[in-house]
Image (tube, rainbow, N blue to C red; front, side, top):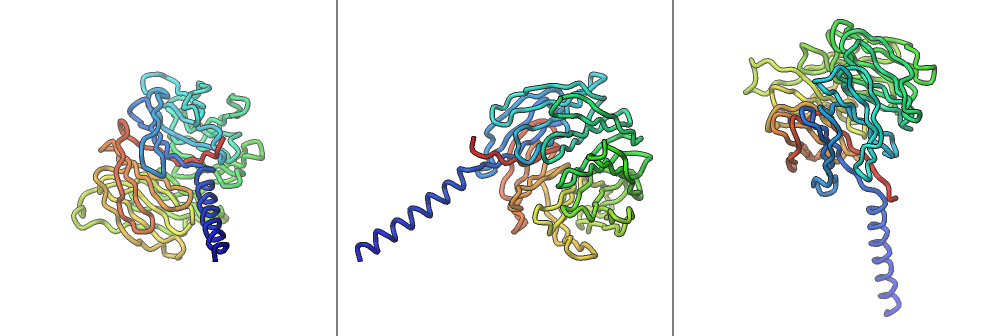
Length: 339
């Protein structure tokens, strides 16, 4: 009996140690840019507490990181100067390690999963392609319009470029083929924030004039659905727009920011008609969102309130609000393994 008791205690201690080791093996952090400030807030996912604050330069806009998060890239829009910057940040030391002058007023960037290539949309009708290893510009891809948003496939093979304005299309680039343009997807109006399915079959796109999103089949390069959000009763008759679109990492839902209606809409993407599941009211104007990799939390940038809203993805309930900086917009969650 005594031996059994010791064995039970040993098993319990071993299980506890294993769980703690797994937890200590990696930590997740939300990085939140403050687009009208000069800084980034770093928030611990486990506690929802601010654990870091870093000044990176005037008007930080886009943010991206490779899978192993050995670096975080931030685009510096710099309203007062003719050119912007791309900065390299050490996510452990909270230090800027390199700066590269690029085109004017860069917006939302994307990098390949290995961190080798960074695509930067600039206000000169071009996407700037950066070799992050060599830390230099290697190409400029003209899309026309106002380059605004960027998406990369999970395998790093393709980049999807979403410029605002007259093009009304997304440009597809083959990264491995010397950053060659290989296709386009036309949409109904000026394209804004996009989202890309992990299997690279569906492309979801906010467009001007639609409180909702369009869905394109990538293989055929055609829009296959226009999905409208259900407008909350109290906002009917009030115009709005959408800015901030994200697919939950488990690929079951897509979440969309309805800016002027202070609402996040959740749609089921496992069904052909993409039905709306629910609406989540926010405390102010929302402008971007991202998820924790385990699909447990959604982080919504509430730009008008200088806060990030933390939402439980299962219950769709707001858990807390985190104070950040001036006009928070783009954000992402990174995972840091133990050094």
